[in-house]
Image 1 (cartoon, rainbow, N blue to C red):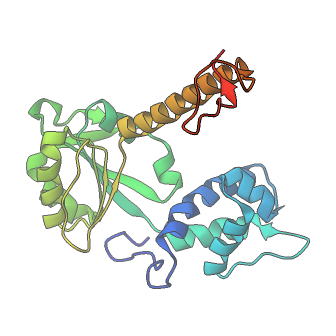
Image 2: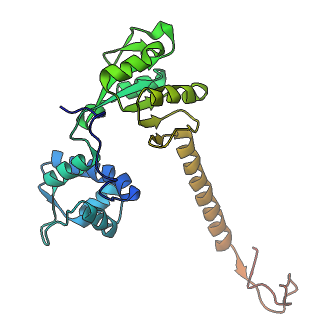
Image 3: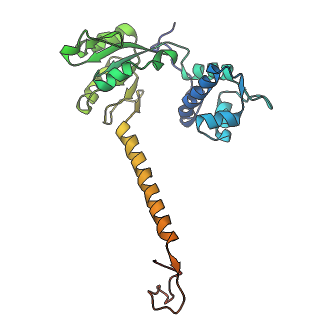
Length: 254
């Protein structure tokens, strides 16, 4: 089976927009669930709802893949699973290294979804000498001193950084120097990389902060709605507060 170092997906050369590429995994996840239930075909509306997008956007995305479905029938689920997997490069074997085997790194190592999605955890790496040799998810942890040799021996082009923020950039630099060209960063810091290296950042605290913003906004809207429900209309000529033109505001506080 081919390794990630010698084969890369052709999405960019085919002119597929990055926004479409970002949605392909959502479609694949929904299609995989349908396939596991032995559903043979699916309409664009059903698949769009399952993926959390609108059907017009889905049809536009699929047009970049050359897949248009069949009128009155929909899309062939198994073919779409294959087509999207091939476009994402998931029909190949992508060896991955995880650097930083703390609680998060260990949880990632134990994640069972890698193998079924075209990824193989080739090595676990940590700077703590006490971790060396200890098995995590059945894989012995190796020391960071051997990082470059591990990358070369396994033909790794994808690295996962799960270290503390202070160590992340140094680890990133070593991964890039060793030939890694794609990095998934879980460290709470922004990494600087040269052209030709792709970085995807996953920051759980930022996602929670965004959710907190939406919760605060909803609470504010609810409070405003409750305040509005308790208001009573004013009558012109009352001695209440007047607006800038001398008119009494249409609604006065209760």
